[in-house]
Image (cartoon, rainbow over all chains, first blue to last red; front, side, top):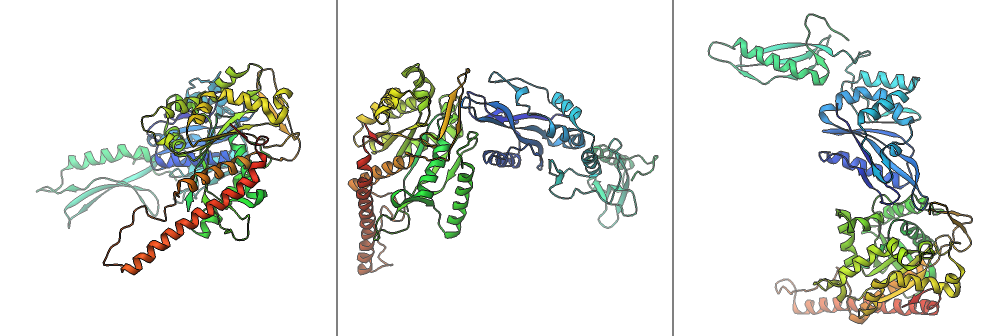
Length: 258
Length: 342
């Protein structure tokens, strides 16, 4: 997992700017979201509320706080700080959040860790995340958050403050009540042969009374004497390899897990 | 509506954001001599919305506590006056004001950014330029040179470059430059600088901004004036400097800002005077070149259109003249004390 730290703040000498900028591949949605947070910070809203914002291609975990330092006119230095995560790592990042967010919310600003004598010093994101995990309290807010996040099939945006977790929309759980995040969910792979269109495809579907589709392979054309077995097998292997990123696995010998 | 561009230029911490708060307080709420700022916009809905945006910002500035400026904000203002019953109550000019982090000036001299180039272009277009000088820093013991390094280096450099441009657009248009001495309520200013309407402090500011001031004096049609200002008001604040050279200040009484409204009115007065003298008006409603299309209007109609257009223009210029006359009657008695012309 490769989240990256970013920090918008000032030093006593240099005015407000990104002291540690976001990586250049950040999406416009994330840029606009952070601009909105900056506008809120300008209006004096720097209460440390943690925002998790998910766009189509990336995600940020961010909060605006008072850094505890003062500039040359004794004005408090505010800091907008957080972690940026590219799309390929969003799912593991999402599963870390229950351990990360409560600690990130209750810890003091990371400004003092990152800025020394007007210069930024590099800090590995893993160290920040470990520190936050240590800070995360074991209370019922944290428990509720863990349950809600681990039960969600796909990440959604949320805020976290003194009242706990507020999802921007109800995260989809597809009727599940319990799910172990360490263990990917098991699914079936179905083969469909369509004699009318002369096409075959493989589809990964959930187990249970009402199976729903998770992933689907490309159509395989029928050859003169039927579909070749090896082509079907290759397609199944490719489909199986791709299941991992959705949090599923194909293990026919193990039976289903809810 | 015609537009007047007012730009504030000052380094970080020189008091720009608080100045905007004070300008809103003085001209939107208290309305000096019936001159006012209001929200502008094409429709009443837009104006009401803009007014809400401005008020929200002014609310934050209540008590003039600022944490510094992080992002650029534009205030969609319109300026007007209803000093006589026969003058229209609606605003005369659009006057958008922009607040931005003062560190942009430093960026302009350093690596540069999109924001800094936008500010530079605004400075080049501006009709009224407000330069900010922190009175605390002007009155430090070191004298002129350290203060110049701290607050005037960027501004002087910008003027030096703009004055030697090959393209003379910047210097050929008459402009008004106002040097605002902010934080004049501070107890850290020595008495000899404060005496005689801040005579000593004004002189020090002129020395600190020397290249800029000299440039403005030498330009025909340019005006430069110094205005002592404060957002708290004299005796309403407590300022001190700690061992690390950090300035602290706290407000001890409700704010009584002064000076900022005079600066705006003075700038508007000079700009309108220029417009009357040179007979131009930058409103976009009257096209610069109008061409008659014979198929569409008859000769009679065409004469009527021309008459109406020139009448409108004359009306606007006549209104400018009335404003200038009234502003002179307000500001002339304050010259030498609250506005120091150079």
